[in-house]
Length: 77
Image (cartoon, rainbow, N blue to C red; front, side, top):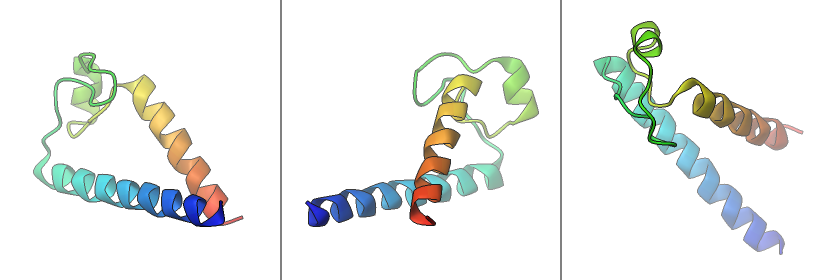
């Protein structure tokens, strides 16, 4: 079980790292996208104006950040 947990943690960490690299590249370019990559809904113009590199709607970004924070907290506990 420990080995499987470790493997899952490594895969999740790699996914977070890949996401961070992709976000950094998009932030550099300033290019976001019109539709949320998680739920597929249109990202409102106000959000895109406030954060041009937005990849997610507010609801999905909030969930993403909570999940990311939870993984970060678990690694540093």
